[in-house]
Length: 401
Ligand SMILES: Cc1ncc(COP(=O)(O)O)c(C=O)c1O
Image 1 (cartoon, rainbow, N blue to C red):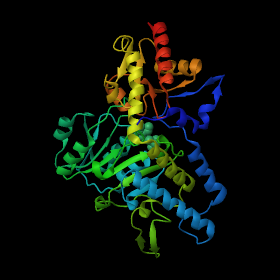
Image 2: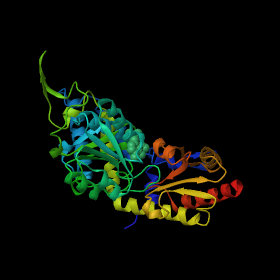
Image 3: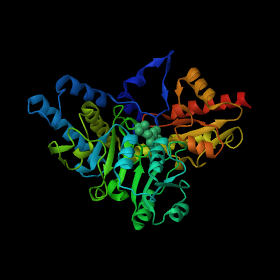
C-alpha cells in the first residue's frame, strides 16, 4: 500500500500557502520537517488546557499534564519497540549524544571509535574527550571491514550514524552492533537521519543507545529522544543533575531516580513532548515502510531525470543508486557555488534546499570538497515537485556550462 500524498498535504497548513504567488517546495527536511495540524493542535492543547508541571503537583491541571506526558512516552516507546523506561526525552540528537559522552565511564588510554562522515554533533563531543586522554579513532563510513579492523581491546565505545545527512548513504548497523558487542564495546547510533524515514526497532537493532530528533520527524522544534537500553546502564554515570533526577537529598547525600527520570533534569518541554507523541502517531499511521519507499521513488525521479548530466556537469555525492541514498540528493554544479544554486532555486521556484557543509566540515575538509547543495525529501513531497527540481537544475546546469 502506497501513501496518499494529496491527503497528507492537507494536514500541513503551510503547504497551502504561497510565497510570491507560488507554492512552496520544501526540500530541507534533513534539517527540520514541517508539522501537521494534529501536532500543532496538540501543542496548543497543552498551553490552552493544562499548562502545568508534570509529576510535581497534585492538582487537576498537573494531573492532566502528567497523564499526557506519560501517554507521549508510551507512544514514543511503542514506535521504537522500546520499554517506557528506556526513552529519555532530550532537546535533540546532539543532547542525547552529549549525555552518553559525559555519562559513559571511560578511562585514560581507552578509545572511542567513530566514522569519518559524522555530523559535528557526533564528532565534537568525542573530540572533547581527548582532553581526558581518551583516544578518538576513525573508520571509513560504510566499510565494515575497516570498522572491524579498527576494533581492538582499547575501544570501549562506538558512536556512528545510521544514515549520513551529507549524502543519504547508510550503514549496516545491525552487523556493526554485533561486531561492537563481540568486542565488548558499547554502541550508540546517531539515528537523526534514519528514525524519521524508516522503521527503527530498537530490539532488532540491538544497540545500547540510539539518539534522534523530534523536529526531523514532524515533531516540535527542540525535541528529541535518546533510547538507552535497560541492560546498558551499568557503566553509566549521571549527566545533568537537579530537580526531577532525585528521589531524596540531604546536605550531604543524594538518592538518584531510576531511568528515565535520572536523565531528565529540571522542568521539561512538556508541550514539545506531547506534540512529539502526536508526531510519531501520525508517522505510524502513514507507515514507515511507505514513507521510505515514497522517498526512494522521488529520489529515483530526481536521479534519473538528471542522469545524463551526473558525472559531467553535476557532481553527485554518495552512491549513484538513488535507492541507496534514502531521501537525499546532494550535489554540485560545475562552475557554480552551492550557495548560488540554493539561492536561485529558492528565488525562482520556492524550491527550498540547504547548501554548505551540512555540519560535516571534517569530511569536506578531508576530501577537499568545498560543500554541496542538498535536497532532502519527506512524505508530503510530490512527483511534480521532484520533476520541477529536475527541470530547474537542468536549466541552471545549462547556464553553468
Ligand atoms: C546525522 C545527524 N546527526 C546529528 C544531527 C544533529 O541534530 P540536532 O541538531 O537535531 O541535534 C543532525 C542534524 O542534522 C544529523 O543530520
